[in-house]
Image 1 (cartoon, rainbow, N blue to C red):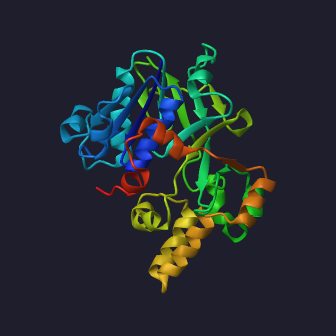
Image 2 (image 1 turned 30 degrees about the horizontal axis):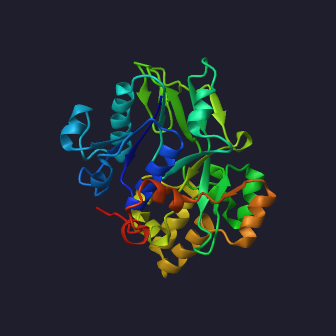
Length: 311
């Protein structure tokens, strides 16, 4: 039994991508907690086999000791913890709506079914999406880097990028945990006991053919719209936060912000070559649209699912 759970507030495209991907990965149950109880994806998904939609209403939040004004991560952890404790046996994977777990040559369910009984939890390390432009035929991701690798790839931005090992998002990864730990509490990246010790017995990454594909970047416009929130919510490393705040407070901020975005989220041929030379580049034709079309043949990807949901 494999349960995949996420608290989502994503574009419709990203939500359908998530569902299609994890159904293909062998999930027996996908539980989507919709932070917006009126999310338009619910109407499409609510009667689908192997899928459970949970509307995160104020009443639901009250049932887990939360209120709508609490930080998203706090609401997320409490809601997913409730789902975990309702899960009867098997494995439980908690990921975000923009994270797809890719395993070379096998599905997630196959990997977990072969895991020894003494392994309680497996953390899968991240690979972060790079914007390489609309002409790209493959998706490109950067892997965790050493400090010397960061310096060789990012040069003048080394101090901005090295704290998170060359990534902008999290470096911890996400964890699949066996169900049934009654005293466990949910954190964003793992479950833990009262002593805060993570329930993790194994870590898997590129050397194991395992990649938590993190689609953090959704283009400059989305990045720019969320910038103020990320600056206030420790969404960047300290050094990068200072650089961005100086630009925001200065003259010609938009040009400066665009330059930073291009460095930290885009990759031209030269940067891809540097990443590849350092062994920290993963590329794959994930055929996402083909996969979505298989599970949602009635959805017009061009018309219905490419529009960002901002409700």
